[in-house]
Image (cartoon, rainbow, N blue to C red; front, side, top):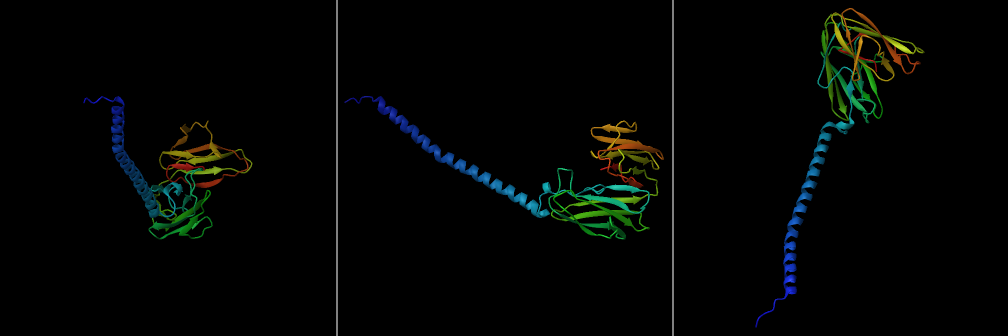
Length: 268
């Protein structure tokens, strides 16, 4: 007897067959998804562990939260010539990079010199070797390094101990060669200060750094302004007078005459 073709039955068979194929794919897709999740999870743990290990190496804070800078000392080291030691080498330490990047935690640090027969004093003239910069706000320390008379070269190193380790240093050499000098003449109530520059033994190109509270006169013919920087070519033994406009006339920005160490004049 001849069996009739049943289109409905064939169609249902095809559906069943397709369903079986889908069911075969499901375990494979599930396995792939599980593998991806595991890889992402493991990768996440690995990254987190790396970040923690890097933080652990350096202390309690991450590098992104830690700022410890100086006007003269550098992480890669620096070299400066001075005429003589005078009353000491003035150095400034800061817990910030700028007004938006400030260390949140206190920073403890030690100061050493090589050779060791140098005296390090704070603004009060007290001998120091270990200090702390207060965190959670702008904090600055001014110190002076006073080498022994017979020393003509000294390396100053400052190393933080917590919350993050960082070392900055500079080497200073007394050359007995006349260095350029600067002085600021000012008094409270005046709308502007006056910067006086005196050239040294040779022509020097200097950079001025300033902020909104004390700004150099842009009409001065000796100053070259370019992309937020200002430079001046100071000839040997020459003298220059530059107005510095004050946003607060009640402030007094007077500074005694002193050697310019390096090639920057920091008016901040």
